[in-house]
Image 1 (cartoon, rainbow, N blue to C red):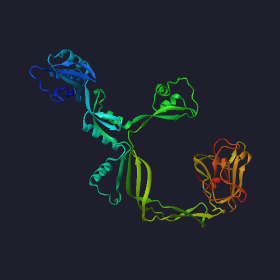
Image 2 (cartoon, rainbow, N blue to C red):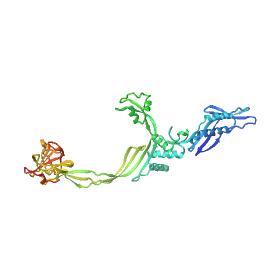
Image 3 (tube, rainbow, N blue to C red):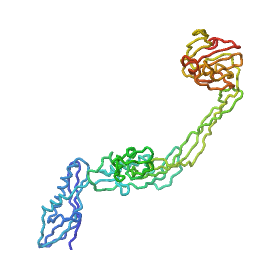
Length: 473
């Protein structure tokens, strides 16, 4: 009975040097003197010819590698020709055509590159010329999701088989690691053109795979904006949706098929962390009726505390999904900052007036101006437009007053009264008590005004006074 077997030729092309190895899958039957053996050649069940000399196979393989392998000269690839089915037959009058069979072999055979691929289940993510490159890229891929030092420490601990001891202060460690799809490095035969450089393969790993998903159209969406959001061309989006017409209109809640990137695997880790954290101090504010309103006094300085905390994180592909606090030990209690806030109303003025604006210069003094008496001084060119009470007092008018525009009058309860005019806005109300230097309004240009400024008047015992006798810029 004739025995068939598979003959494999392996050719290595590396750095421009070609070598060949001839391997026969089984021993040929010994022939009697009057009987000769021929070999019928098949690829994928199709007969290519019959030979009577096995050297023909070796020569055909060398020609294929020489023909196709020259395109990959200089690349570190293992090029292979294989899978020729051979059926030997012993015949009294052998019929063979070595040349025709070799010609068919050379025309039918292709070379394949022996590579090392990173696979996730039945998906090949990237292929590399050497196992070392594949291992390096897989480690780099995992380090994108798990810090290198924690991953190395976890793997070293797993080798010991010992349970974890209590975590040390300031330490972080991984106690569990699992994959939704386990990565493997497999030896494969592929088209040499798809073998990737390290950086290309690493990018392919990070990008993951494209999966079909469903998108619900929102208000304002167009086919172009949806395609752009999912990094598709408009043509790709139309093709995904049954080759729809680009002129088609879409409306909210319509459903479209899109493609989204998914990682090849989900790396889930349990990470423990122990750290000393600061406890911020709180602040307590207390009313002090003996302290003038608007004043504050710190009676107790605040200091932070310290606590030892231990957390257990669940992370998926580097992102924290949950955090559980398993220990919260206060090492140092914080001290509350205590602030006393003055509530004492002081309506009587001190007798001296402060400048009622934030900086600024006098643009017009008291006296006769444009044929009439100018009762006060005008202040402009300020750093900001805040208007301040010149002394403690009680608001006796706050509103619009014709030519004065928005006006405020303060009775300082000591014979003095001050007026603030042309304000843009008023910050207080009639009857309210104000403290010296507190904000009462914002400089403006209301009423009969020549521009953005404050008109300021001073009265003593009902008599108009020159403000420059009481205030200076």
